[in-house]
Length: 109
Picture 1: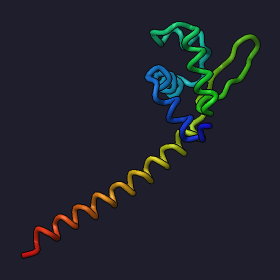
Picture 2 (picture 1 turned 30 degrees about the vertical axis):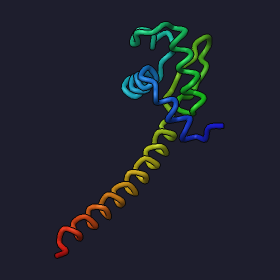
Picture 3 (picture 1 turned 60 degrees about the vertical axis):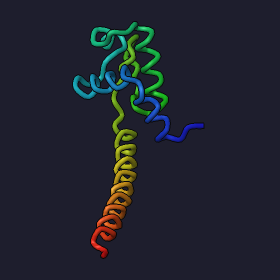
């Protein structure tokens, strides 16, 4: 089973889902019908992508009458960004150590 980071990364792997997130960031909450105007995919495809984003915790669904509004939930993105930054920092440390090793060998007679 996926852990939370894996679900978020899997959800973000699709360009249509990233586009939905960007629209929600720019415009705020929208219904699937409203998103249909902004995306080159079917209404059924939009619903599928919204369900995947909701399962990953990236959107929250609020029912208002007959309409379902989808709101961005930024916390999973923030948690994933923190994890990516930590992995990147560790990788930078390894590259710096390799650089120091190579430079040290070049300075040796």
